[in-house]
Amino acid sequence: MVTCLTDNRNRTAPDIKNIFEKRGGNMGSPGSVSFLFDFRSTFVVETGGRTEDAMLEATLDAGAEDAEVDGELATVYAAPTDFLAVKAALESAGFTFLSAETGYVPQNRVPVATKDDARRVLALIEALEDNDDVQSVYANYDIPPAWLDELAG
Image 1 (cartoon, rainbow, N blue to C red):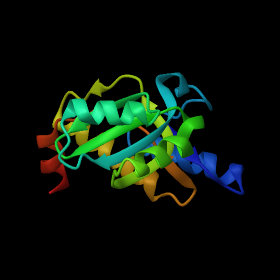
Image 2: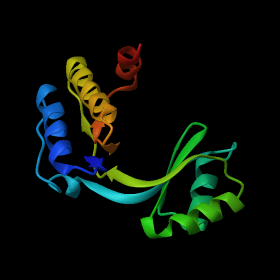
Image 3: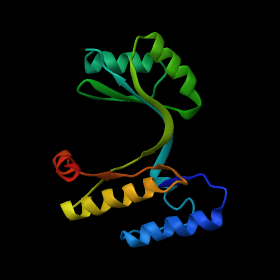
Image 4: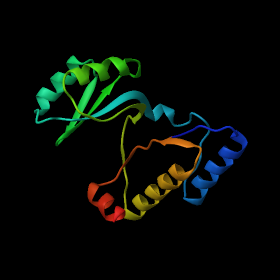
């Protein structure tokens, strides 16, 4: 899903459509994939040595809906309307933020079958992000971390 901010829709829509077509994608009508995503508050915080159970308890006490711990980082999800309250509660609990934003989170992830497909997906996203009118690109792909490392290098 691509969000754009423009002063000229007649210029931006064809530009975005062209990016999709040149890189093997298709541009749907506005809102055609929004049902695959949830609009949520998302916070990425350092765990500070807390266990997964301690992280979950602290974030739920702060008003969050869910937390995913991955090593020394945790991604905390909350309702978009609770952004400021949850952020303030997490700050007062001593969490260090790497990011705090509202945005679209995929409901399900789709595995990418081959490295060539992964390369094409990443090239499409990069081309979209390079467009000046594109604010954010949200995707539901699932590329193995080893492939990401290889393709980034």
